[in-house]
Image (cartoon, rainbow, N blue to C red; front, top):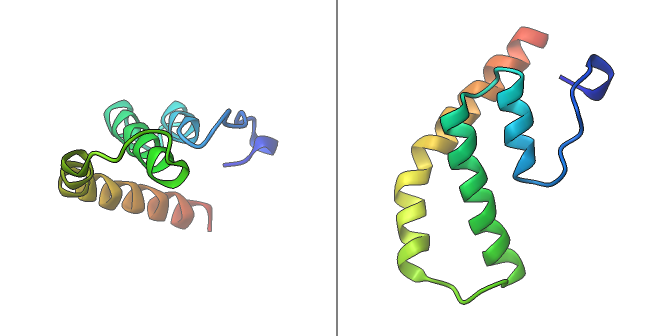
Length: 82
């Protein structure tokens, strides 16, 4: 799961989920939703835009299952490599 195995380097934080999708670690739908969460994270951390409390609340509600699915996928990848 590294560049030495032919994986391309992600262009940015959100693109890391695309790379994982390209290698079958997560499916395309999950990768897209995680890119959306990464974009929200960037807005919050870097204050790119006014904070929309309703959007943050919605992302927290719907994003948690996606984060759990991501954690399970990474755990599976780690156990396959180990």
